[in-house]
Length: 632
Image 1 (cartoon, one colour):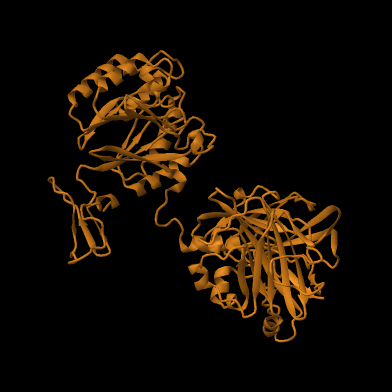
Image 2 (cartoon, one colour):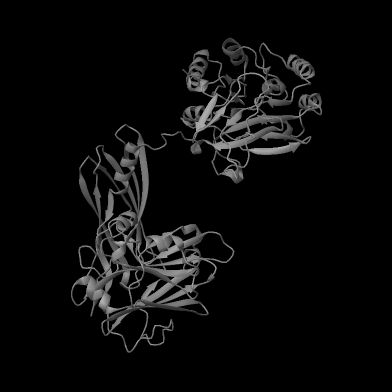
């Protein structure tokens, strides 16, 4: 049985929606109603027997892009329309070679054979531009203009090349059909179906958008009169909806035809139009082809293949002994743990300070294979490691799942040298009050992030930058942070995640636990998060965060934070008691690791960014042991 025969009923959570097969009766919900309040808004189901929906596909050709239209047909099946209409330009055409025309039409009809519902052809200029093509159309499809009626909706499908050829304006294409006959047809059909509840007109060229408007098209509009109607066209390869005669005249974009694909504002996108008909007229939903997927959009084998690709690139720790850096070699480890070969394409880009010695690399990894990429990094002059900005490695990783589905992912990593940084003695007593007067300086200067979440919301160092320092007094650790923010946003009515602030993870455990890379959800489930200090700070006390209070452990006793506003942003001080570090290391502490990030909202902007000193230790491109400090 075809899946399209199963449209009579849907059962969901025990509610049967029984659709009537005949007569005016509408669907009824069979449910045992409670005596009091009910967990639904209404039982008047939006399912009138006269309602239906259909799909419009638009220009496939005119410098067609391979496979777009073909691959869209199974997605149209997912929409389960009553039928599918075209607006023309289905083959490249523009030839009088019958063998070529037969090959192109055979290919196209192969695409249409994928559909589980009727398809209605409409000719465009690529389908019908000379006598041979018009005769080929008649041989395969019969008339080039026609009409039908379904559930009291009239569909009128016209041949725009009879009005005026694209290749020879002002002339009708030669062939068995003529424009006078088409105009007589339009007059007759519209008169005979004046009682239709709605009229849909399909024509390839949007003649109303031409100057001057073709007189025969103006005649069609006059024949349509005051009836409710909607007109659809294609041809322009750019979407526009125009209200004309108080009616919608819709020019569709493309379903694979030539396009710069610059997006919605340019009307350039691949789509199908899902049109839902009701007594109130058509409701048009433009569905981008890339956004239509079935239940198997990702299966387990694809998930595993993607996971393998995501885990196939790892930046090795790049630790140097000196306090500054001039030249050295970063290493990126590639490993294929999957069952199929993968392709790795890497591009290496200079940052503010570091320049890679190579522009890119390609590698193919067999199942189980491991390779190492070595990238020399150099600076024009020595740069202190506390201030160095990263270079970038951008990867495209591709392969197949075990069932043969192609998969591809992209990864971006930052490349930077670092050392085991010093945590020196404090210059004197530290008061955790957010005022940094007692600090001898903030040697770590971060104007270029090691990781940036949502980069479109960050405009550079003038938007946000930071400086920080670490120190120990007695057995306790202190961290001072100065944030420069051009538009600091704080509110006691928001949670910490919804406003500006500093966030950090402080890990005092011994190695290898401290330096091992692990993702956030694994850290949550294996107990890692219960063994680190995870907190944030800003100048106001934020609203309690119900999410963080569930997933994150409470602060250890003795942890302090303080923050104050400044003319250029805000400052933060943090204290971690030495007793906590000693407990975690099982001895007098000698080192720790911390993750530092700053959330940046700008007043009036909905989007925000997260600015990391080093790649998040729980993120996709974490580097083992980065951000480690040693007691000096």
